[in-house]
Length: 146
Image 1 (tube, helix red, strand yellow):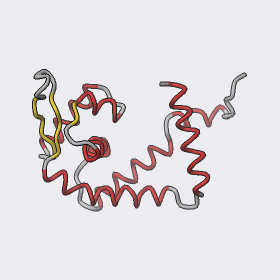
Image 2: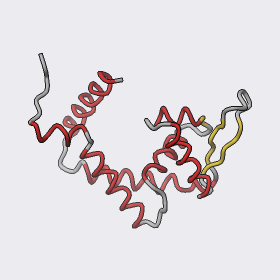
Image 3: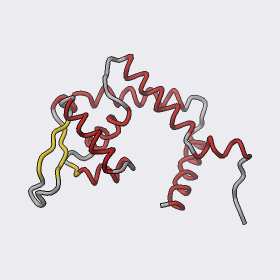
């Protein structure tokens, strides 16, 4: 039995991530106002490198849900900004490992603070219980489709 409880007009907005898009736009605006000249897409790559520096480009693809050409372009641009550097893997010369530079490490605290501020703004009036239910439901949707 189908479990789709969305009205026709709601479905597209839900699937395209209306809330996610709004949060990304606000975070981008907050970065710009703070004088941080990186995109949200670039920040998402840095975010994963802050969690685990020295990831392969394939690992970054998996972590960010992006394809190889997108990650290659993002890493190229982050290299131009002197925020990451590619280093050939010691185990497999065909593979590059991506490492943070000192400049990127210095951006971490400021950008994470802006991200937390943006998320707090987005979740204003939303209870802890509602957040937990939303996380559970979205995880189930993800698990159903992976």
